[in-house]
Length: 359
View 1 (cartoon, helix red, strand yellow):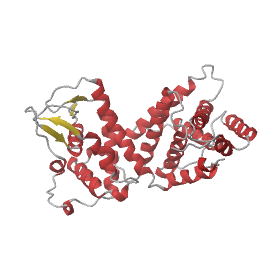
View 2: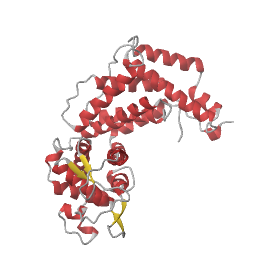
View 3: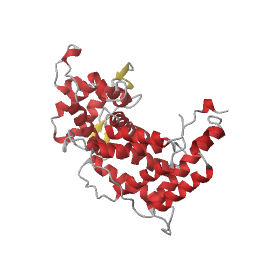
View 4: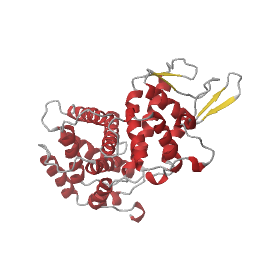
């Protein structure tokens, strides 16, 4: 991983944009908007707690936190020998001017900025991309409570941006369940061009639930990730308060429906699987965002119907489900021009020096 010194003006615009979003009274009318509101409230509550006397504006606190985090991340690379002092100092430029830029940015953030961006998928994709770029160059240099809050806010902003795509259904959980399973089949097998990652649905979602189990006879049993995911989605859509999930070493003889069976399709050849399209991608993403929210409020049971009380297993299931969807969203956002504009603008602000070229 290569960490750059971030231009203070870039971090300033990210902090200002996030505060603008935080105060935009976004309606809690979808799983994505609720997640965004919760994440931004948590982020600004945490940074505001750094200044109990309220001497600085919350966006100033966020700017300073991200700036210091970036500086520490770069200094850590120098200390570990991954980057030379020459490379760091070249990216930072004149030390006096760099510190002057930080002070000017702090001063400009003493009140809300007049942020101008369109509140649509491309406008939010740009903010999401810019925020993700800053978070990448902060790495793990922030204290854990801030690092976790920043990470969740990055993911929530990205998910919210995607939810603004006009093709996203407003009430995804009212869609025909069999259509969702058809979407999963199509996207996993024929959705390569719809994501910025190889076999994205399989890699980020299905494979996370591949489980080695046993029959009661002691014979080994492999539970395919696609089928495990399908059962979870089916139970969450049924919304009866419990969800069947697998875990390593589980002993069961239960026969569960497969993804193909739940799709209602008769598949003998690969050609029998419908081609994937943008509507499928949007419907699948919207559905999974809503189900991720629902998963946090249900009881997890094993395939024998017994409650899972091991918090480690419960946390792992929730983390893999949510993490898979966040990874999938990350592989989707780059398809929008706003995300590419954010990346291009970020690169134009950086003074890059390859460590290999440093004396």
